[in-house]
Image (cartoon, rainbow, N blue to C red; front, side, top):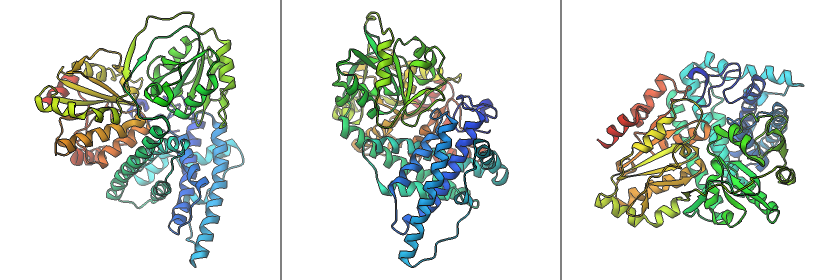
Length: 548
């Protein structure tokens, strides 16, 4: 195997025996093959779309296949094998649609080869052999590190965008034009003669696609559950039976809340589900009592100590300990071998039964709360106060400090940075990176909290809209605002967001704790020249450079 798609790539270059995330060679290789097969589907779907022919099953399969290969999602080789078998069927359906569209238009179908010609091997070992033939390592040998690195930058961005698109689809929001762009992008990635300039252009186009998909997801979330509201959230347990929900999926949480109502079970959020407690349509459930624990990388310790059932939605799972393997469940695309999976009908009876069988919390812990819910609607609702505070000098600077968290040493930088931000500055934060400092006390500036939690990584659209609105109010560009972005990355959704920021022309981003292994020195040179992107340094040095 060879994998360098996440920040924790071994030795900063790539995992070759077993992934730092826990995936083994078989899983990693099958994921490579699934990406290859998905490219073949999109080769056909892209050409069919050019003739006005599309199929929603094909579109949705491509999104789910990409999301399945995101870090910390699907660790089950048998489930990936099922995806591969479906991929061949979906590809054949796409070919039939394309051929009919050509016949209707009086055209001859284009002769296609490469990924579109793939046929699944008869057994798992054969699929693994096929996967080894199409992985990153082989393409680097043929195409060179710079071109392959840019291809992977686009691919990983597309994986992140697919995650957001899948969340939106689950809530009934889809756009055929966006699906068409996915197909076009994956078709482009099958070309071996693309120039560096063309690859960079497609990386930025992927960022544009992500912006549109995040807007779609924002509409889906707020349309279903209302706009997040500033909300005090309890972060200490209360007595009673308990279920902990982690991951990202709002619909799973809603359905679980409906099914547990009146059963004497308290529901807690974990990790990226924390922002759910600010949505009016979710916090109305009285048995959604608070948040437990922190970011995803601490789950093995936190889940072990949690005296109830655990539901993992969408992604961010780690190898379960035996101590809680019998009371952890997965849903959606996330999976681990041997862990009970809840099907698409969302019948959470096994989760509820496990919670009732577990001891629960024996007593209330001393109450402690934090504030969440500062999405774009909440912040822009007091924009006049924020603008006046900037004009008066009460607020000197804004720092967006957030992104994906992880276990790799060096991430204490973000805690130290937040603590060293001067008292006349405001910190915006989102995603699980905030768990490095979101329980610290930062106070306020004239009633405006100095720490504003915007939400999940999915809510990066809110942060962008806040920045755009402030730029409009001050009649300047976003790069001219007293705003600096100090971002942490871990997996492919962070790559998608970074590409969106670059698409918007946002400069001077500091990224850490390390730069992506797939970004070669030559590619980094392009990013530095055009966007002045830089690795994080020390909190003191970075603050001094930013604030002058």
